[in-house]
Image (cartoon, rainbow, N blue to C red; front, side, top):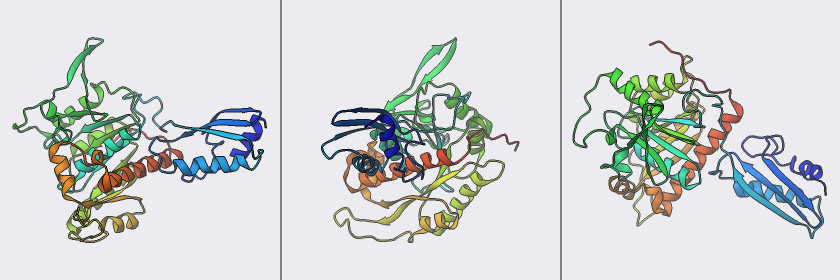
Length: 362
């Protein structure tokens, strides 16, 4: 077979999410043919691709149709995370900036963000996390680095913060820069200035995903974020109960305002039901049932996942060892959530225009 014949065969294989063939998407590389062997590389849009094995099998089946039965088909799988942030003046090496938001506090937004970050890193992605909740930072506790302090280096005469790295995730939080038992009593502009420093005065290096753990509500911090950097998309975290959903709707509506226009990547329904770990098949809907699912359907956005209320998740957050690291049913739930998020980021990058900073005067 020739290379062109292999590519012609592979042009019949579609990416299940992007609905285009792999050759057109430039996902097929390094095609080589020799007697008795065909080899090529499939470049996925994310290392956390949940459809990896399906794509591999579809490629093998397509080539198998046009080669001898004895031919060896050697398929390598790699990944290159997609982005629409080309030539971004700030954080040019960061491919995707994702805002994790909620309408109200107490819905587990920081828990979701922490586990998402670690799960993406476990999949092989380069991940950073900014704790943008200036007045109530919890990321240092959840990553077991409350006593850590980031170092500072000089770059062209300017002090640059070096993020702390834990569990494969680069971290910055105001909690690293203040005493654990002290309160940050700042007006809004000071908090916004701190967030800008986390972007512009830190050495983030090359990242596939930079997650932003936002404070509850819609505030100066949210506006500062969308005005400072182009945001790939937002994730809305809620619990199923009515009072949480009412506030989640406001958070979702903020990102959808015409002057902000940040794509909503999906909804995460946290504490979807209570499950005793010794009775994993039992579900008790103590906060209501399918509230986040119904919210996603109402606003036509994906439901990224439903995370149960399990005691070990709370214990993991308190001990500083994110639950996804412990494996089991809960670890699998967060892994699936990360795969779902990565998948919808890839879909967003393939189907929407390049993201831009918001020029908004409020």
